[in-house]
Length: 313
Image (cartoon, rainbow, N blue to C red):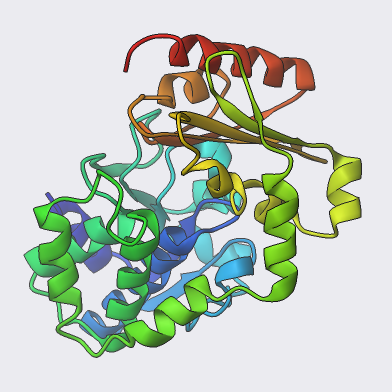
């Protein structure tokens, strides 16, 4: 499955790694992990990472992005990781690269790169890259292993979500052959200060339910400014407060920003991805996202989700 990826790496001296906007642990983990895998196994290569800032995941080692000149792209290989659609890619200069490779575990939306390695049966993009390292017999470093393990942990919900399989644990075991400091990792991932707890309580108090039990939270730009938190924290960071409400099988978080209304859709038994795609988004069967233009669009999306919840899973 990875032979064509290897060929592209061998044929390029400069490699630039992209991923999606507003990175989570899997996007950064796959980016950092792939960088260190290439540097360790092909030391003559020059590898860069580009994109917006790490934000919440800035605790990850080597998570600061590189400043890359436009002039490097025409001879470079560009990787696009953990991204299902062009509109989600951070830094559009990948289009200027000599060749492109995409590695992704989301449901397929569109062709993006010259070489496509996509498989939605993986719990994370990091898991897919770990499998590549194992299959190609690449040497693994603690830096690469820690980054990839972080992505597997975050995208599997600490190995809780149903995308977790026996293969997930085999690949995690492969990574854990390196000295991964899981105590520090989990402390960084899950430690919460008092301010964050109070913010979480604020969002819990905003939860509303539709007729058929879809949980949702609406946050306007004005409310977001008053809360004093960034859009990523309010949107993806708070969608989980609805995850364990009794009787709720679908939940969605709407957050208004300058770029539009960010929508984070989640479910247990339902495939909510087609609704996300309908509104220009994408993702996984039970965890997807989209960006809407108006609150009217949000109401229509909510109505579609409510209709889905009214049917038997």
